[in-house]
Length: 133
Image 1 (spheres, rainbow, N blue to C red):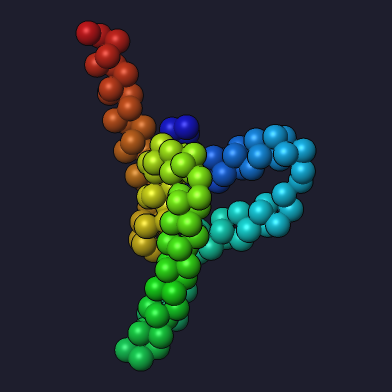
Image 2: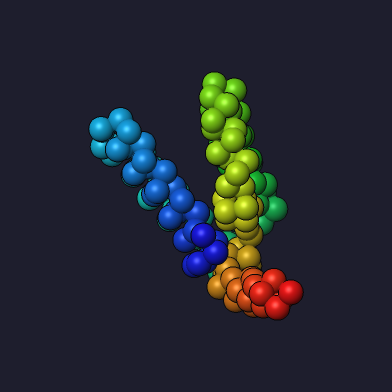
C-alpha cells in the first residue's frame, strides 16, 4: 500500500474495508459510503487565504469547533475499540496509513506528494540494500 498520496492510501483502505463489510453482510452500506466520501473531502481541504485574517476570537471559536469534532471522533473510536477487539487490531495495524492523514496540517496536506516522493526514494534504497546483501 505504498503507492499514492497518504490521503489516497487511506481512502483505498477504507474503500476496501467497506467492500469487505458489504460482501460479508450482503448489504450495501450507503450511509457509511457517503460518510467516507465526506471525510475524503474534509481531509483534503486546505484553509482559504481569507482564514489567515481571522482575529483572535474567531480563531478561538474555530479551534473550539475543531476540538469538539476531534472529541467526537475520539469517542467513536474509543467506543468501537471497547466493543470490538478486532477494531483495535485493525486500527493499530493500519495506523501508518490513517494517522498521517488525520494529523496533517494545511502545509502537510499540500506536501503529501513531496513526502511520498521522499518515501519512494527511501523504499527504493531499502530494496536495493536488501537485494545486494
